[in-house]
Image 1: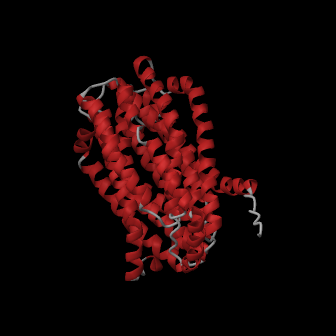
Image 2 (image 1 turned 45 degrees about the vertical axis):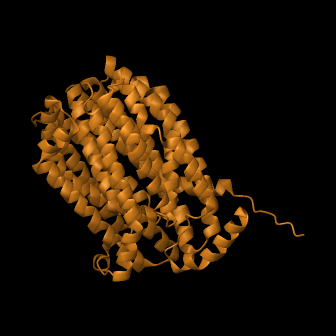
Image 3 (image 1 turned 120 degrees about the vertical axis):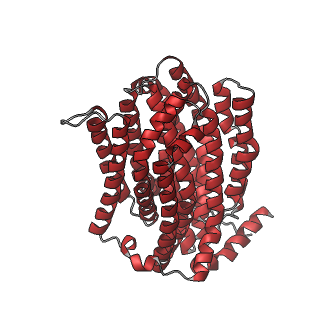
Length: 471
């Protein structure tokens, strides 16, 4: 009988590889979240209603994010696998398709914000004062949406092709622009009038413009090719377009339906007392810290897993995927402990006092308990997508959102009128169940579904190996 010695997994090399990808992305998101925190602090000087109103406008931006993120997820699947296979034409074609779909969403939301802001605010809250503030803000900030979407499309391509620093440098420039112009325009400096909430919105537009321009300038300066192959972006073959949308469709459905579910949840939260609305606005900013670090692991999934699948190295991709979930959970746990330890000075700096402070503290405790499992679920889903399986995690997330989470939030918040924190806790009641199901799928290996010839050629041997393990 022959003894087969399993090669030990090289943790140090793996952590270094993930860190090189994840840290710049996490830093970029950390900068953005820090900018949002400073925004909130500056706007907080105008009053809690202003904080709450801008927070609700941010939920409209989150709905935009959900509508275009399906194309980002699908696009990164193709970017990473084609990059691993060295197929430049495939990258160009996929980026063109992704960009057109994303910009369509950005323009539609810009039109809604600029021309129909009253309708948007009426959906999110029944508080007249908060609605009026939000209308003023949306009419200006809507101009930022197409630029933000274009920047995100470029950043996704850059990250998937191992150019993670360019989006980071652009984020630094954008955040600094936002902070400086917030200070100048909200309260009036250098002889300019104090514009209040309009100044905050204008600063956001200027920051979006700077972010977009810096990405383009740095990419051009570094000789990065794929962003500037404009003609190749629109040379689409019918079979490749069909393949793109078949792979993207589950992700698009996932992000849209999850975004719609979150909108329903935000409608419920937006009809709570003003103190709760302000607390939610501040909480969403701090939540961005956790999601920002998760985004680093999401990008790492596309590169350390997706590129190996595209290159036909399926066993390496499988082993990396399992460790990526553990690494993500550990990192998010440490981050949550840090947020809880520093929450008092942070919340006070963001103008929360009394009841709003108490509510936000409770929200952070609940979230930090759930966040580790939630981010592990999201990492697994993004890993599946990078490897070509866009269906499994999508179906789970949609089913649990609409069959468990949304009904529970609506029932407790709108019908039973339970304590606010009970309603908020219902947002996370599905996470542990999904984690168990996602882990079973992870170890099955059935999520490895290459789109490149190299990956497809290696698939039969990979499948046979895992079928023997199960038997």
